[in-house]
Length: 161
Image (spheres, rainbow, N blue to C red):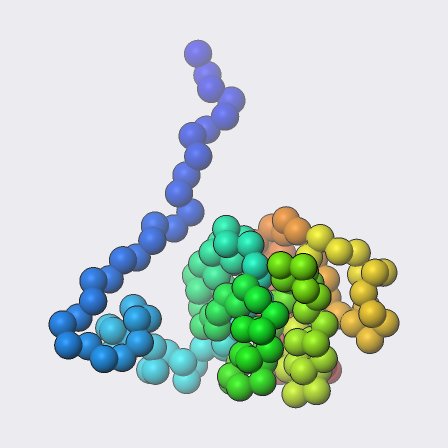
């Protein structure tokens, strides 16, 4: 008998790296392996602001698989604002509602710094403040191919922010 539903697949297995004895650096596996700084010079860095764990884990994995360096995910407005004000990155993906707080102050900071960003949210663009309605806004859930295409467009060198 033919099964019309194939078994589910694991997208990407988690990479667990044991701590190195005496290591005083970050817990980032790329830092432990000594590869992060060498790759950062050539990779575009994307700030990911998303409070839903599974959504952020899949998005981060998809972005990394596509060759981007991911900053975050930031799950709170405070963490996102701290990153927006103090970190260096090329673009951002913003969920609009972070645990009941709206992300618009972060969007304002990114616009002030002329850093391109897009929204990924269940909110319709018509409900956004006027200054942000022209920004790309993908509905959740969004296909990863569509998200990656939009990130690529957002980070084009000649794009006006």
